[in-house]
Image: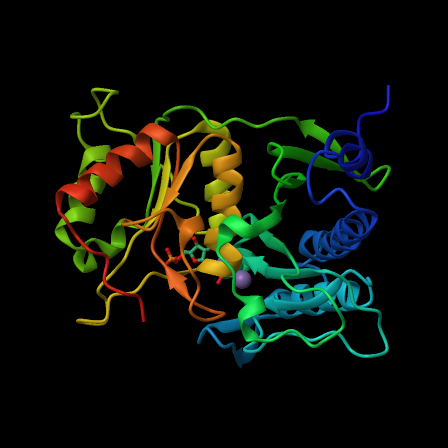
Length: 343
Ligand code: AHG
Ligand code: MN
Ligand code: MN
C-alpha cells in the first residue's frame, strides 16, 4: 500500500491548520523541490568538486562553503518564482531577499538556514536545511516594511527542517503536530515515516559543546553539571552526544529525548552572546519542539515569545524534553540571572 506523501498529508491531515491553503501547499512543494536538489549535491559532494570553501565570508563572519552557496542559491531560485512569498531572509544574505517584479508575490514570508552544520560537510557528517514560515501581517500589494519581517516565533504558521544523512528526512509542523517523512529515492517522494512525533518527557542524552566551559557563567556550569552528575532523576550521568550540526543534534533530541544547549558565552569579555540565530534556527526548532510536547528557552524566557530586534539576532538556546529543560530553567531562575540583552 502506498505510504502517505507530504502533499497528501498536508491536504488530508492539516486541513484544520491555518496553513492548509493551495498557496501554502505550493510553497511547501517548491521548498521540497529545492531540498531534493540540495540532497542530490550533498550526496555526491565528494565527487562533484563541490566540497570546501568559496573563499568568501558571509554576514555572520563565517567562511562560506561551496555547498552553503549552492543550497542558498537553489532555495532562492525555487522560491522566488513560486508565487507564494512576499519576501524571504536567509542566514547567508545580509538583507531581506525581495521577490523580483517579474514574478507574482504571495502571502507568506520564508526564513531559512540553507545549510546548517556546514563546517561538517567535508567530513561527510549530517547537515540540513531549516525553514520557518510566517503569513503576511498586512495584505495588499504595498511593499512590506521592516517590522513585517520581524515577528515573534509564536506567529509562525509552519516550520521544519530537511536532514541530509543516511537517509534524507523532512520534519515539519503547521501547528497540528510534528510529522516526519523519509525520501524514497526510487519514487522521488517524501513518504510519511514518523507520524505525530512526541518528544519523551525526559531523556538520557545532553548535547552541548563543553569546550566553551571557560566562557560560561555559574548558572550554565551548574546546569551542565546537573546532567554530568548523579543528582538528577536518572540518578546517574546522562550520555553526551554532540554532532556540531544543530539540525542533527536537534533531530536526535526530538526522537530520543534529552536536552540540547547552546548557552550564552562570554568569549568576548563583557559582551555575552548566543551563537545560534533566532529567526532561522532557534524559532523554527522551538515551534517544532513545543508542537511535540517539549520546551525551548533562552535561559530567561520562552524562545517563541522573543520579539526580534534584527534579522540576524543571536540567542542562547536550551531546547528538548520538558522535564530536562525545566531543570535547567529552575537553575537559571535560582541564579536570578537576567540574561543580559544580546548584542
Ligand atoms: P551553520 O552551519 O548554519 O552556520 O550552523 C552551525 C551551528 C549549528 O549547526 C551548530 O549547532 C553550531 O553551529 C556548532 O557550533 P560550535 O562549533 O561552536 O559548537
Ligand atoms: Mn545553522
Ligand atoms: Mn547555515
